Length: 319
Image (cartoon, rainbow, N blue to C red; front, side, top):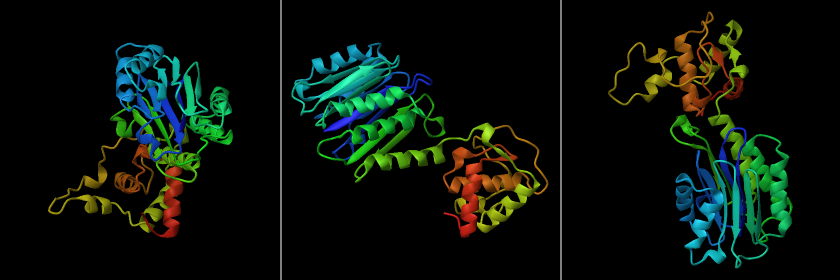
């Protein structure tokens, strides 16, 4: 009913599961992963206990093969299950029960386990593996490409419905608070893989910080443009500070000049026409627009933020 690839990025150690199925909200059932431990896909009449139990076995020191054997050994319905595991060292293991609906099977290799059931044929799994081994593009995007290649090779014989991508890295979650770097789910869609790719693009926009090398200096000309655009969207210094204070709260004169939000890069001296209050106004607008992860240090701006602000200003509005 499903095809998936479980993988480890050899460059970063990131662990991931990408999956597609003719099944509602496959992302709520199949993918499990923990940074520094391993990743697992449980499918075909999925035993969701395989997720936490498998990660527990890996965390205790079991390798992928040993963990997989431990899971299926105590399962009375193992003949109907399918599982793929990759451990923190990139060793892969895959199991397909003899009663899984055909075509069903899997392949493993350095850094991956690919498997599927109710497929058009073995070419579906081969397409995932070949795409992964080509190694082109960034790791999360490559996994979505694996799903697209599998779909082009025939995919799930019953059709399409949902897809998901889970990628974990230590401290990779929002604000660094957990390991859930990418956790995207398309629960019901006519083109779930295409929609997953679109959501991944949005993830990159909203949650990936810019590179220092990408940042633009806020010089006098850019400062004048930024002030005009912030006015246009109604984000003058102090505007958002007043808007977010609870009723009865009191602000102070430093509210519009201080932010504790993490920023990319090292501060540079402000240019004439751009000071701490305008930097805070920009930061507050970015927070309202869900762009806070792209905040640059004082004196700098991310070009993607600048482009979005220009677009909003041209439309004469903010979200």
